[in-house]
Length: 496
Image (tube, rainbow, N blue to C red; front, side):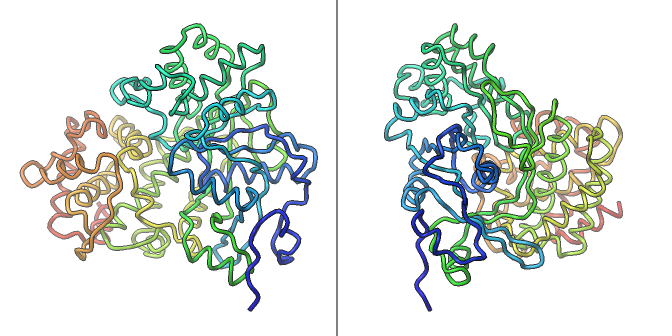
């Protein structure tokens, strides 16, 4: 067997014929986008779309410079630099088919923790038109009590006092925008690519709030001049595993130390508001719309909530991956009933979307056996996900007299999951949540107070005061604690 080919610019011509690779001259690509938070999703989504556009040969000013702000980003920075910033995208189809494509749209990577000035200068460079972000919910530094920027954060206090040595993304953005303003340059667009409702509005609130603590005139300028388009992003991108790396070695003869795996489906809906121009992403499938809200709510309440509706009871039952859950007829019907009975009645119409087709496509995507998205990944950070993805649906159904039984069952399963931290077989579950200890303590209190878990105000608000919900929830808790056989409880909830 021949030795695998180490991925790099010089080795592109040696790759197998069935591996797509950049045909554009990467030496001519310049940076138009600075992206903070280069992970799997960015590389399967924005970088993927940009690579498609670069293939036209007429958009070479839209290359991407990646930025890492945390020590945890160093490994990505190192590997990408060793591979000339190339990586392989492995698209896994439900029928087992594979597409492999080497992506070339990332052309540089800077570590902000090593050289803050270099990152600020790159953002402030006249060629930079967009600074985009995938920094996860936690990266926005929101004060949960006020919804404003959390100035009590130690890194925030440091950035306010040391504007030339920032640690948080908002410190870097403010410093770069200040520099552009001083030089008479138009501001760049700040484009959130995170899976957060109204992500542009949130980014604007946080950045203006931070900037006002440093320079109120600059904050006014940012509020007036900088665009923060809201966007809906969608592509299931599980964590890359060693078996994915080995697949590239054995099947395609490629040595790529950090490829990306994803599903075929990809969607990006963006409000068309940009400060200094944008790529013609619409030519490669991106949808530009005046208002992204209906698309955003559809995706968050169906896809994202749907993942949790499978993942939490699936973890308790003992399933390891989302596709395992979907192959179980009870889990699959439970999910579809949740979509039809609890979500659809409270969704606004979405122009150009056949909702029945969309819901069917979600179940097909979740069931893709080639993706094998870990249930543990889906359950990760549930305390920040469920208030956004699921609680609005519960509250609207309570207000309208709609069904809340299926959602209540999953909240009760989450209580059991947080309490026992093990599945029904007694096998330990890896709980990864910033509120892990608080969730565990509140769930343990269920033995004396069945509503103890619902008293976590930062997650559930005042839901504990709603008699209709608490009555349904308490009954679900009793049944799950008597027997954590989620299949049976899901069937009962559907028959309810």
